[in-house]
Image 1 (cartoon, helix red, strand yellow):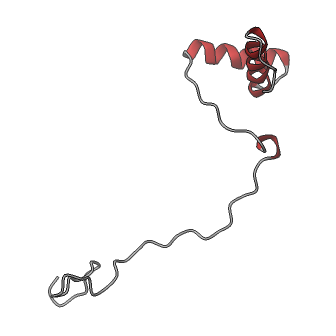
Image 2 (tube, rainbow, N blue to C red):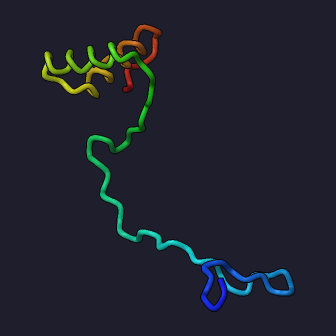
Length: 88
């Protein structure tokens, strides 16, 4: 840019930048507290068919349960089937 200021650092004759690059402001706001139902837990992503996802949602509604509680029940049943403690 002629006659204006550049947002890029200028490379000096020594090969060192003479001005720092502009950096975007970092959000310093505190993060929200963790949800109580997620404390001590980790996400366990998996892939399923659209039909299976829909059926899980419907089953949860029919049983007045959350999908999370159904998946926890399913994991514990899987663990027990293979001789592991139900720790989900």
